[in-house]
Length: 256
Image (cartoon, rainbow, N blue to C red; front, side, top):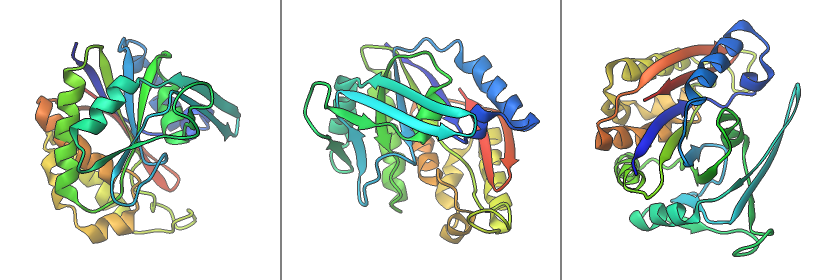
């Protein structure tokens, strides 16, 4: 089979609670695109799931189960892990990837919690098997780009159809009254990333100064590096569908 689609999907609560016109517009645009996704497996790299200090974690439990409280209710979901694909991903990059287990090797207790960075994007898709990967936050940029290239090769040659989801919010320092304060670098960072989507040149992600990343506080800069390699390996072009700032953080939706 082949890789069917690639998504850059935000994970703000507002995409479920829909408190304003921007959130409603973005949620509608996401639904319009994802409603036609027919992939059998969805791979998610989330910045809010498993985090390892030096490597990338691929979760190997049999099941996933998650619950997240929202202003308008609770978001709950259970998924089956495609452990064959998860194993192939881990084995393809043994120098930077670790297999992670939890509780038991199989059965009902072999269940890993699903974070909101995975729950919210997956909410927009039909139920199916998933693979969950924890986004790393180490500063070995070239290794992350290389992992993205290898990841593309694994997914595109898998026996079942696959979609790739990069779960990602943008800078988190857009507002003085936000939890992370204000920095002028937030707008600079978000514009730089938008320009990458518009131009298709994601290699520029390697050149973003570390002090800009630190000040802007995006949760997904490392996913941007992985996606840069992923898109390059597949010759994939992304379409930016919508961007806006939700109080203190930016959200951008794009798809292949």
